[in-house]
Image (cartoon, rainbow, N blue to C red; front, side, top):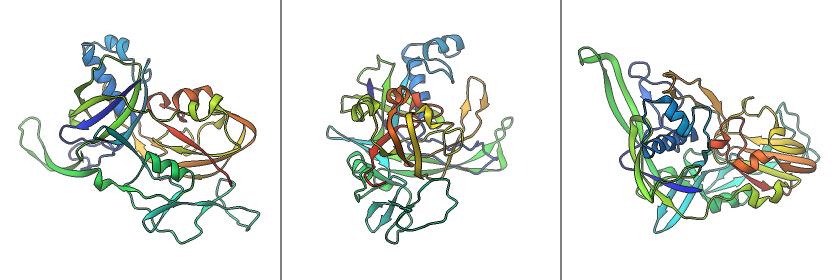
Length: 357
């Protein structure tokens, strides 16, 4: 397993799922961290460079790194926002969606107990999450360290880190030009939002299936092929489900936190939970942030990919089991729950036992 840490040489651009050309829309927005689909493209492209594969030979490319649907041996966890300073790696994760802001701390919502107080609702879950005190709206751009995330999943109050201390957006402006005359085109003024990570801040990921990258190097990443420097680290890896749950056996009551976005065929629900859990269980509550759209461009087919809705990182699902429940082999191998893209980093999860569901 190879641990990569990427830092920006200049600025980065990772657009959202909306198609963008000068004149069709006036503003391109960046998502940060980028989606795993972006990073797998970056890694596979650099692997082709290292192997000196002819980029005009599609059969050679497919032989070396696979296709847009077949990733061959590549396995990816991430990307995650991180900071590498003085030999110490700090990874950051979105605040769980089942937490609300109260003063300077985030506190976990409680599960409503029907036996305590009757509640009539049309919610598609058995129970609701609520706050015992008046919460305030959660501001965007809040991050937890790995240690604080574990405390948050255990329902302990935690403080968050602001995005403004890790990176900043940077707007740049331009105007479209006519291809034939190279003169400016009317109604083609546009704004592109870039991301500038602060010193020592970048993207962390764990990669399996590739080697020969050396200790450090440079590669191209994101919109406009901006530069990134990479360093191969030797740090404690992300905790795995097989370590935390030997043989995949789960507690009777638990919640699942999504550290990266995930795709489900039925919107915020998968085609079937049986793909990920072996046994009799029920989802009893969920805290899901607003969906995100992901599209992109397929260079091999020279066409836009269809835009799909993804469950965003930070979303939390609560479960109760009847009898013994195990994680399936697929989840244990990928540390992910997703109907699509688990092997390249979508749907990365942490699981926490719940005491009082």
